[in-house]
Length: 280
Image 1: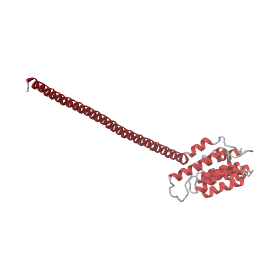
Image 2: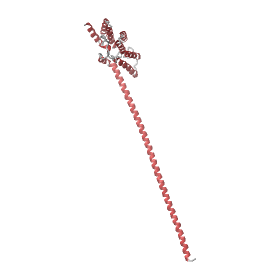
Image 3: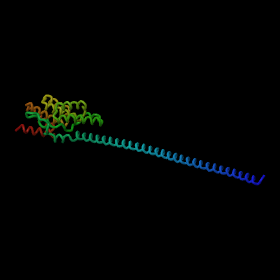
Image 4: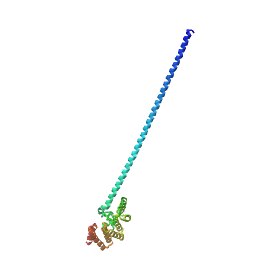
């Protein structure tokens, strides 16, 4: 073979080898590039997934905190409501006890302040101040047989009923007041205020000029509650009605009876004053 042919063949072989090597080098770079792209994509997806998980965890934590705060606010509101209820009940209890003390321990002093006040007087000389004083009566003596102690609810109901009747009397609504006091006696027959309620029924009747009924009511009080502090007041009211009817002899005898039976009472002092005035 000529030398020139050998050189041509060698050159062709060298060119073929170079082309193959270049192709192999190109394939490796392409593969690495694709691998890097895949890795970048995976890293990006991993970061996005991590970020989404983080956001979800934060949302879950926030939801838990919000719910906890809501429950705490609800509990605080309930505690405040209960405290308010306790304060209201405590205040009502204090008011009930205070009114009980007012009715059972301080009624005499209030009656004294209100005597001669604005209650309506009977015309034509009328009844004395005791007969037309405001409603708050003197403390009553309990009945002979001591009843079981009433509950707080029963005591409160008793006070409200008596106070309602007293309010009607203070407004000079004597007919309604008499009915209210009768209802009180029906509902609370063993009340320590029963003599007082009976007394004010008689006063209402006198102001309505039902003198016969007034006498019967006050005489019934004296007969049923002879030791009650209202007994001398009832006798004083009886004397006033007798005088109003022109029966001055009976009125004088009743006044003398008050002094004899209840010498230390306020009614006895008024009886002495009226007897002295009658002698002038």
